[in-house]
Length: 164
Length: 157
Image 1 (cartoon, rainbow over the protein chains, first blue to last red):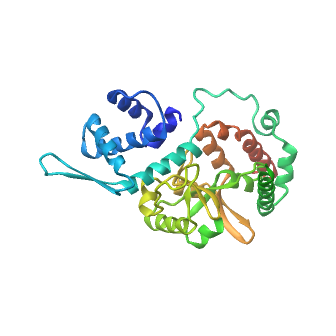
Image 2 (cartoon, rainbow over the protein chains, first blue to last red):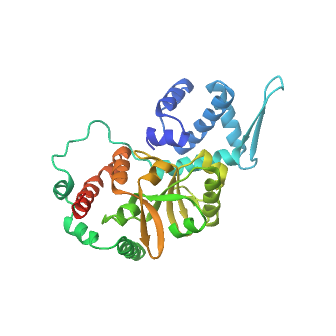
């Protein structure tokens, strides 16, 4: 997992993650389990203003309760404030972000893009796009194009099934 | 899935690979990408229909806690899912285009198999690909630019 993916799973900007890990003295090791704990640290820290180091300890205690307990409660020393975390819902949100980090996230290309001298049809041809296929597709109706997509997907799936 | 969303009364616009394919792209896509209206009634309907399709998260191990309801969608409006009907990516905002309202304004009606649905137009798809700046998006730009030029040539003015 990259730092970018880790930040997606935590649900925080990359800079926040780096700063929090530096404050907590954690090594720059990015894995799903670490992201889960830091994500809860962020929730506890931002919702209640609890310092990061204390929030890190509390997050560890809370996560250790799952799945035996679905709710974690922490009562302040003076007994005036109770912090309650719905662990099922927190972990559900974590799972959504983990899925996004694995399936949707990709590092953005940084810096200025190489300038393409040609655009449109000429640029696409130079890039290697088969213009003949595009022309053929444009002669079809949108419905026919989507029918062909269905056929292509079915063919691909048959190949996947045939793989040893 | 497009038909199911429509029947459930979910307001959404098809974006991504399927929209590109409707415009003439030759790329194969196996999942459906949609931008949905984030108003409470629509989010509720979307959550209900996804739950009825047994939606689960793509790319994660089975058995993780996952609640598909309105509240979860409000907290995490972008999801990559697999359902009984296939894979679907949902989002409430499209980078480079905007919210559902902007996406809808930049969409056209597509008619396929007696089903009418809205799909993001070619300039919108190009704006989204450029804004995403991921290598897999950037490599689709030449084909979409060619399609736009060819379509404009076919329909001058």
